[in-house]
Amino acid sequence: MGDAPGRPPLYGVMVGVKDIVHVDGMPTCAGSDVPAEALAGAEASLVGRLREAGALVAGKTVTAEFAVTAPGPTRNPHHLGHTPGGSSSGSAAAVAAGMVPLAVGTQTIGSMIRPAAYCGVVGFKPTHGRISSDGVIPNAPTFDTVGLFAPDVASLAPAAAVLCDGWRPSGEGGEGGETEERRRPVLGVPLGPYLDRADAEARNSFEERAERLEDAGFTVRRVPFPDDFERVVAEQRVINRYELARTHAAWFPRHGERYRAQTVEAIREGQRLSHDAYAAALRARAAFRERLVAAMDRDGIDLWITPAATGPAPYGLKSTGDSVMSLPWSYAGAPALALPAGRAANSLPLGVQCVARPGVDERLLGWAPDVESVLVGPSAPV
Image (cartoon, rainbow, N blue to C red; front, side):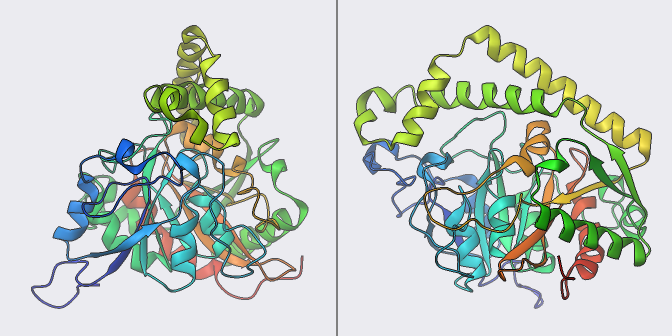
């Protein structure tokens, strides 16, 4: 990627862009039958950054309707009968199929990490707000985060440096400092009801990968976290649905008959929520973020590692799968990375998710290659 002298860092790289991101000359349809002219807007600044860095926009990629849950037509490149995940389905599948080496997606709860796991590619969701979301149709702005898909960490890192505000390259000190990246991170496994959401096959594969990391010299600490997971799930849903309803306050009354049933249901749920419930959920989120950082400080954890999804991609195209393995980290606005980690018994990909403290995206990507090198390779029987 643009490593020749004088060339920009993404010179000639073809990029797929999720179809909720405005690109000049390409209509934004957001996976919906709502007229494109109603959704039109100025080009996203992230697209301008990609172009300035030498990248070429190959085209728009399929999204679930308005990046919610109603699936698009994209299929999983590893098995066409299975979902690629969502809502960034087209971006993950395009990279997995070799159509483009880089794609832009977004994540509200699990819309990047899960498709990356299902499609066997790397997915990076930075700290909330690290990449500008202007020119991107919102879902729930408290959580919405622009991110990237690529075949491996080395291919993704230059684009992250281009798009993330205030990126600090290795060797400049601070959170992206060379010393921090050279030492091996301490890994944490969050035990309890959250981890129990993974199915048996995914959990067994994950435990084998955690043991492999220990054998390679990583310190892995298993600690209970979070202790209030079901409350986190409930509070996240309040914020998500409340903001979704407000996002569509102008479009939905005029074009509601064109929305798909799953999106209508989510918007209606948000319309029924009170502002007091929303405000309380926001306070709970701020407190959870503080507890997340405190837990990492207390136990000396640099990265949480978890299954990237509850299991391999489900059969069928009526659902994009369960986003719960991403939920607490997206709720906190923390940066997360999905890394391919073997295959299930049906030969579909599995992944491991790495999660860092909010704001230390450089460390996450600096540490990732060492973790990635251990995770790749043949899977043990599960």
